[in-house]
Length: 469
Image (cartoon, rainbow, N blue to C red; front, side, top):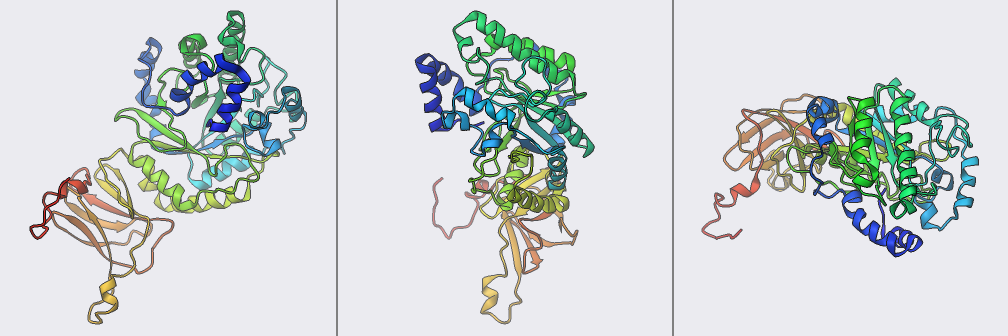
């Protein structure tokens, strides 16, 4: 996925000055998923007419599982191992004969996704290495004719559907294996061959597996949208899968934007999805122990939901398709939280909500969900004034509409509160956090909740001490 500095240097050195110029032009908008997008094409305009209906389930879902799995999993050194380690193609191809997944490994992925509260799955059908995880007729560099001896994409689709999850295919346009994959930028005959090959592979994916819900393009280096014939590409995809949604990484705006490894809401009205690793690697990396905590994942999920976006969280199965133990542990804990608190995530809407250090916020209609990340404990004054009863208070400044009621989301227990022009104060709460990694309090309001602490600055009584903003 992401191109770190060492990867860029190695890649540019391999392909020289011409490659450097092409990559520099393509890299920023394609991989960092910047907000600036090409103008709408006629094909995209046609898609706009059906976009709301096609994306309804996706907006409701909020949380998906990304799976990076391929020959790089055999090495266990990150999905960019071929480039990072300078492995010659002839040597790398040997991995295809030694890739031996256990039967139906995808069933475990799908069961874990469901337990974690994820509603859809997106698997790498072909990553940058060029190896096809399905039974393609266009190259023998595929799972059916190499080590696995079977169609891994078919197993993935069957597993996801068995758990009631929507199905997505990741597809890397860039290809390190195909002989025309780099020279197509400067050789028209090579471009024609490579574009036809690429369109043919995508056609197979859109034809052979029934209804597909998401097509997730990646890395359009070294060609631009015109050279890829991306408009024709999308028209073909929609002719075969009229209800599918596609992202923005084939050079066209597509249905949604794709910030990577950071959360950045698109402009209001534009769908977006942050994709992120569970540690620091997309593919299996046995030495990568930089695991995100369940608290971080839950907070990221709420942040995406607050901005009207989705969270596509990646796992990197091992060579045989097994799920790393820490992945299991982390996502199982996340699943315990989503099972109790899913109401505060699924189907929520973008809101004008200002979070704080202690608190994240989401909303659905007139309901505000306060995600208390750090439980306050009892009021400090109560420890030394023995005539005060210890009390836990969660306070939120800047809530504009009137609160009507409040409850702990997990238990449904009523929460007492007071409200003035400055803050909502939720009182009588237990000393210990009722839930981990975040306790959610649902507050019913008499209008759409807006939380804006900055609007209070000019109103707050400061004993005649001025403040400038």
